[in-house]
Image (cartoon, rainbow, N blue to C red):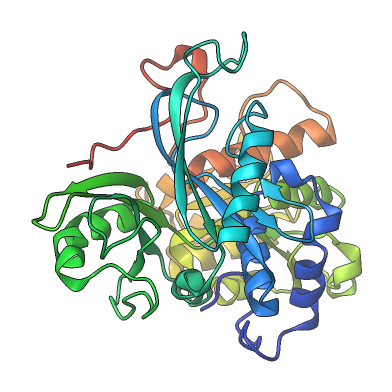
Length: 408
């Protein structure tokens, strides 16, 4: 199982599928760098590490109050290429770029604090919080993370962001996977006794895909460790080959999904027909489960516009996969016909099975144009992937972003 590579593809290290190389090499010059998704950033990190290019990574590790980005947001700054990502809305672009340049030059990690509550940065910033940023050179300490993601595993990245212990510098890191087979690297790593104290929290953060900060007191000096839970990129499978697939694939890719187009019509099953998809496959409706490599993080939308094909596809997915979400294009009456036909064939869907089915697919945006429909569909899929209900933020009580209470 791989994060972004087909099951028949070679390893990221060494021989690679040509499409992966093409997508990877175009990251820096074919996208809006500021709005890079987690998928874009990870692909960039892989590319930079493969080429051993100099780069720096800046990560939000703590926020007190409100800020545009929350902890774990990243900014990747290569020495000779366009930087990717954003850790603020733009108000700190200059200082962040300077931090990255210094990290590349010095080869050491540092944490900088920006207090946006006062007048130092001018009026009307829109943020009203204190932000801690970890700036560090890109090196082999992130290789275990990239390897875990390539294998479809989540990981918790434990990074020291404050230290009174000379033996454990800021930037010391250990990557904790579910198999717990990685213990960082020999050059910079967190000692085993500290890691043992972090293990349970790291496991919880990794499983939740969240982040937190842990303070540790020891005789040699206190430490503050940022734990970043990172999950493999989510997948979006689109079953169909009509024109409405194109904007959904485009918005899905821009939202950070690895998009697969499964075309029930073999004549359209090629990369050129769907340039925004990561991969395109010809697929009979009953073949869909075979395309799902990571069920926990795969979301499927059925839009073949063929009632029989959609019915067969839905049955196959419910029988043979554990995907958490299946969106079905079409009016409610169409689904009632599909349900009745399935029942007549002896396969009645239970209410528990249908808990993961959303039809008519999409959020209510009030727009029936092709673009509006695509935005509606991808918005609902993104909400499902993030465990959100897609409601208005103005009607939500408390902070906009969830803040797990894992700190100790």
